[in-house]
Image (cartoon, rainbow, N blue to C red; front, side):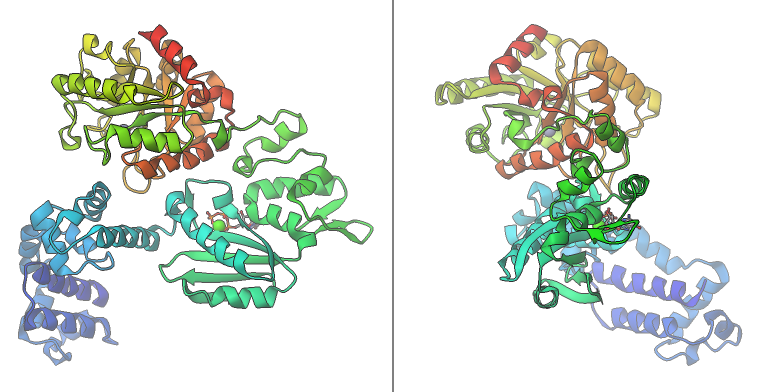
Length: 574
Ligand code: DGT
Ligand code: CA
Ligand code: ZN
């Protein structure tokens, strides 16, 4: 073990003791000792061999003995004992901003939280605000801090976290009198599921003034680099941002370049060269000298004899060839969506009543909404028993009476596919729902054959209409189930089952790759938000992003159907 590994053990001990409620000199002693060992200019092992551990400042008899035990055996009994008393995952929880040992210990004792993921899940469910001394605000802050921690650890953030930050920065930039236009570029504009850094593009004739104003924004933590065209900063919560400035007459090439992807750009530059241009973020340079600047991005493609290609398609997945052949699909847009087919209410783990969810859907401009609460075996989500399904049907009937003729409320269920492959409700009950979603929430780690067979069994049931979030992944948190997707897609096609693109930015499931394959095969897709509260209905933006990355048109998405068409389709399935 080297100095820093030994020091880490003592730092852990200090934190574990604090979690136990110890806050006296012992905690301080371990911290000081750790710090001192870490900053020794000499190898701790050499000092130990000289029997001189106690000469190290802040290292007394107790720490010296423990250090010796660590160096001799690679282990420390005292440390192992502490770890068996206190879940080690709580040390990660302590890395979340605003969470000290006292709070972490309460989360553990009162809510059985032993890891950052469990803390996040509890915060999302609104469970933290129920603790005394906590509220909705401190709960939201903890969620933000968890995001920041994950960014520090993985270097990438979810698009759901990135987009609001980018929108805030764009709004600030657009307020500046010298800014003519400001747009997002990079992976965010392409709607990738995770984003490394934010790229923002500004059109201005006064780059210095604009950059100066930008780096002075209170949200900017430090400046990493400042150039003529590009400034890189780190925001106070660790998010990295690049701002590029260009004169408006060069904005077209600049936006195209900064949007990427790198691979798409490489292809485009090759195409330009074959036509006698060299293409950069600044201009088209001509072989015989001189340059052509373009203000609009579409003109970049026009110069190369291509129609404009949507940013979501720019991944070098055949889009340039499709553009050359005049075969670009007319991608789905948010305004094409007419309804929501997956939403929860307080009947299971949603936060709002059926009525409130209906109002929210109407406000989104939807023409229909399916309430699809969980089924009985999902106890943690307060799943509905057969009896409660009947009661819910009565409430749905009541709410329907209050609705205008042009809005349709569907009574659905999100039914568990159980670990043994059977379904959570019997067929005669399923037949009484307007819409049946089947999904996996448990035993996702089963071997491939087993978990695939479970899913296929659900697909084969004639009452099942939609498979929700097929892989079960949570981005950066839980790996997808090991499904044999070839088999799943074949089965969905054969049985006419709809596959969902779940729009929650934590899920985005199907992902762009499988969504594209499914659509190409002719499997109908749904873009659903899985809303557990009204604000979640806005997640459809991300689901549409996935669909566009999957080259999907409105004709392939059932949420673009009218309510009567959906109803007719559902009735025909029984
Ligand atoms: P990210 O940030 O990792 O999520 O991914 P991007 O795509 O935003 O990539 P980033 O931030 O490294 O660069 C922004 C854009 O700049 C990228 O989409 C295309 C362009 N770019 C960066 N490096 C190169 C390069 O070496 N060649 C070309 N042609 N374009 C580049
Ligand atoms: Ca980027
Ligand atoms: Zn759901």
